Length: 280
Length: 280
Image (cartoon, rainbow over all chains, first blue to last red; front, side):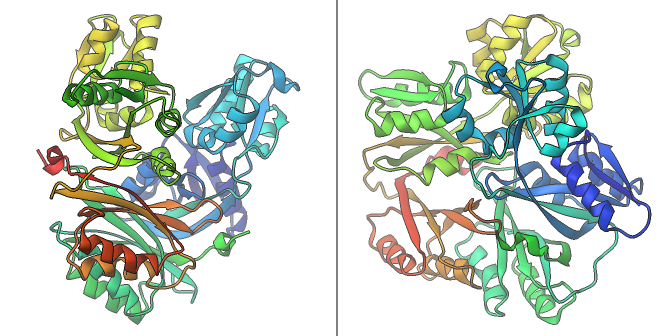
């Protein structure tokens, strides 16, 4: 099995891909991909069996570019979720934190540690780059004055020292990843379904009517997000995650009702709930 | 009047601040601030009369860090909105686009032009930095091989040439800015109100019940957004913009009903709708 993740190795996506590989029966190979869109393309065109992509972080929120990619899935769908506890470390070649003047990392990781830097190291310059593992490469390349925000696992992989650990502002920091594949997942009795839809017109009560189709059946919504429709300011498409599997009668009935109220509805997939998301 | 915006000069925020200054009676001074939080602090502590902050872009969506800051407003509130048409240009010192190897800009601006670069200039390296105007400073400093994605106005300010214009992937690209001040805005008959709220528990139908308070009064919602509550994965706070002013009876009644269903409700402000948001 070929599992695609956002490379280079050492990123949090890499950790999740390794974990997914370990939980999978048979031989599995983790393949570093250059972008989220290349992961999805790889799955759709058959070079990859599975893709691992981050969808939301408990501090920073939705990964906007991934949300937009999901709306355009063709053959593939969401067949699983995995939640990873994120513990950011400040890594560098030297052992002294005082020598670090510039810190690289993915913008989301820097955001999640903003309080640590502004209160304890206000003079360090924070420089966004494409991934936490790219940040490690830069810290490795440029020497003592450069640091990277990344995982403890990345420190080992890039031969860097841990100058400070658990530096994220929220002690509780998790990222939820989706597993993308062309196969569908059968009901397990403890599933979640993700959908995306748009309304034909901006009329009062349109979102209300969709939520009514869920509320009247006592179906719990676990997530409601909006994204811009892109062709006009003030028009949105909506993403909803709800408890249940798309093969269950109650969900079939709710979706049938909703499809009459919207101009576009796509079921992104039904998949088992990762119970690690249930809190501390 | 002192108007704070995200500096340095030449950013899109700068353009909006200048426009706001031009529309304001009396002398107005635009002041470059280092961050969104410093703009809000400046307004709350009286060094600034007004702050201009971007809240959403029609292609890229919500500005997450600003959403989070709004939830923590104390004395200040939203007293206006301004919509700016965004036309990105590729700027550099040289006149030849072929010499550009690396392109700086704010991450959102790079995102909005991703298709242009991947289809027409796949070999240019895209490097995120803190603002479009910082990108211009870098392009100015490092020479011909470096470009910046910024506005035409920024080209003049930083003495750069326009190597390509209107390079954003969506011809229609607008950013909505909020005007923050400690004063409140009186009803004009064509207003919008922004609120943020949280639920005590994750129970089916909670968001549905809030939307019902609007739908039953025929109050149109112009925006529904969620942001993570940050202490646990899968818990959110919600932002809603609706038509109407908080001083109008119908809105007072809706908010009174909602306040009984939520554990936290904050009115961020009521303000006149900027009619430029109504489409092309």
